[in-house]
Image (cartoon, rainbow, N blue to C red; front, side):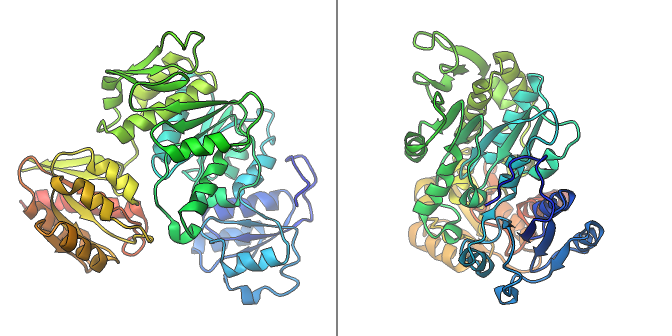
Length: 480
């Protein structure tokens, strides 16, 4: 185990293996070299830029993730820092476990090193199957409007160790945590934490829904002030009920409906707080209106839930109502999250490439009346039958893309046999998908990219997939 608990402890000479060399993996290696550790990075592949950077910081790079290259000497390290891409049963992870080498994440390391500057940031942590990034960014915006220096980080944007090493320091880190990071995470003590929702996702990585839930539930462990759960999601409540937290920590719910006592939710057109006011048993504090929320994007139950959760987190750490309101009014969703792209011929085109699982796609499908759905990719072991059964009446047509086209085509044939379906593949997959979707759509319909699947079979990531969709929509408008 690492005995060092501070940036100012002596880390020099510690031998560390880092698994993975992407943005977060390099930040780990760079930080450890700055601390004087002896670092070896293992990666199956990486970019020329990272190879050059490894040479600059004088860290050893082994371009392999094959455990057969781990001889007895290679296993003699003080600890391992693993990137989330390495599954728990990865041969290298298993080899280090067998050698009884402690395994950490960059988040563990950041927690120990958080006192680099005199201004030591408090942490707010957020997880959930969907909505993590939007809730993280919105919470950060509210804190910013309250006058705090804040960094959204973790599984989003800036690697957390880069934020730790900022010379000015921050008042708050708002840390998005994926289930992969939580699986490996040791003890931290966030000021407030939120578990937004739970639905089937990454079951191939975790080995099943129960382990996925257990890993997600670790978000609440050790929280100091408030744990935030979803009143409409029984699993997040279960996680809250079983959480081991610091004495005095409160359990607060968020809702898209009327809030109960100790909850943040909506009464008619108002977002209200019944958790962080003295007379919460008799009254509620108005925070914003639905009209304010509509400035962010399409008002869906998913967006309302994210706004309520972010507001609960901000209020938990002392933000006043004015800061919450200004945060909502100033915030805009990042691209590829139910993003309106264009209108052509009375048909609206929306990009929700970020909908990489069924739960996220359900939020998109539920936001519109009549949809031509562009769906497919890497399904990650998820069954989309419930989506077809729930939203079948509003699906005017479907265009199927990606690796699992046969499986999806069979689902539509069995459960929605009267729905027009086109299967698209090839180099110009998105261009053809948008063209066919436009042919299936009528005025008043929405052509929706909400793939309910990962993108790596055909695209670099969901961003590239969304950009490809938007370019295809632009080309379609130009051609017509």
